Every structure is written in structure tokens, then in C-alpha cells.
Image (cartoon, each protein chain N blue to C red):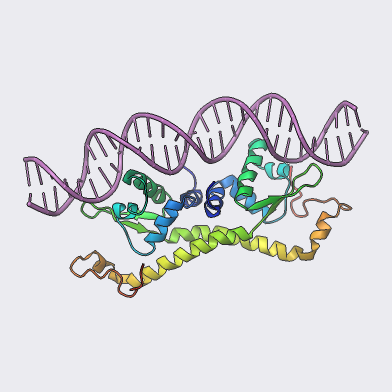
Length: 120
Length: 120
DNA sequence: CCCTTCTTCAACCATTTGGTTGACAAGGCC
DNA sequence: GGCCTTGTCAACCAAATGGTTGAAGAAGGG
């Protein structure tokens, strides 16, 4: 299987699963409970939960016949960190370039990164 | 096709595409340029770029035969907002529950969904 | 014990995904 | 004009995804 970051992104790429996660921020839910709003079989929801579980986004414990699902929100930090890291880099670059973009396209003076010398 | 948020998550669920995005934070790149480090065909990279473009993460312009690829970092905010919104809600809930978890497991007062009564 | 409730497992199916190869379009260069 | 470079389009393929139905496991209630 893929790395966790990939699994987390993939897990949240589905609107139904995102909605489940959203609802789980309010309270733990059983599988049937979670399934109620959606127009799919219980088995389909069970599969969605497996995806979320494999991504580390939820855990399931046992409570009689019920399987309460619990959100593990820390995993979201994984994504936030990745995203913010690159968003910040992109923003810095845009700020640095600003009006200089025109020069970048110019091939007479090839000095692509005016301020960022330490690129790679 | 799916909503944009889903497309963005799906686009970043692939390590190769994430790496492309990471590299694009440093500078724009041509397709061949982007493809160089990966052990796949140029066509495969072209497809990856289409996914990123459909998600709104990159734009491609034309410059002679070359197709410079440019990162549109604002789209990342879409995700950050979604994630942070629910991470915060989850954290608030955890903070509120804190030591109260024990009571939730208590079966004297079986009211599984304190806030959502409208389940089925 | 049997029955009902809650949930998963298994098999199957259609669609999507990520890759391949081969052809071709778009645009400089000799 | 012909060629070389850069990139996409098309057809194809294997594997993964998201759904279905049917059967079965796990745990309490009569």
C-alpha cells in the first residue's frame, strides 16, 4: 500500500468520507449511525470506514455488537504540514518575483532567482 | 467530474504529483523538465499534469514548443481551510471531553448521541 | 437455545486510474 | 522545405475503487 500521506489524501478525496469525518468531529458514531444519511448500503459505508481506518484517520473499538468509530484528528496535521510547507514556499517565491516575472521570461540575462540563491 | 475539493485531494494523493507540486513551488518547469527525475514515460507525466490542471493546481501556457507549467498555490488554501476547520472542531471537542470520556462509556444513561438526536 | 441487531466478509461488476506504445501536432533550426 | 524537439492524443491494459447482493460472525435479549 502507499505511504500514509497518500492514503490520507486519497481517503479525503471522497465527499462521503469527508462528510463522515466532518460528522465525527462532533461525536463518535456507530457504523449504522454513520451510514444513515447516505443512500448507499451499509457495506459500502463499512468499506469507506476501512479506507479511513487504513489512513489512520479513525479507529474502531468494540462495544457489544456496535463498533463505535472515533476520529484521530492528529493525522490531519500531516496534511496541513505538507500543504503549508509548500504553500509558503510558493508564496515566498511569488513575493520575490512580483513584477520580475517579465525578466524570467527574458533570456538575455538568465538569473532566475534574484533573492533565493540557495534554491536546490 | 467531482467537486474541486475532491479533485485537489485526489490530485495530491499521488506521490509523483506531490513531488511535482513541491518542485513547482521553486520555479516553473516545462513538461520534459518535470518528467526528468521520474522513471515513467513523458506521456504519463503529461497525464499527471492534466490531473493537476483539472484540480486547478497548475496552469499551462505556451512558449514556442514548450509548455511551461505554473503552480496555482491559492488552491491549496481550499484544502487547508477544510482541514483546519474540522481539526479545530475535533480539538475543541477533545478539550471539552477531556476527563469526561469515562462518563461517555458509562452505560447507566444510554444517550449515545448527545447532540444529534435526529439520527434515523 | 434461538432470534434479532450490528457489522463485516466474499464474490461480483462497472468505472477510474496510472501506466504503456504508436501516431501526430506545433514550432524553431539548418 | 525538411527535420528535430517538445508535448499531446488515442488505444490499450492491469489494478484499484466504489458500489452491489448474499452469507456469516459477534454479542445481547427472550
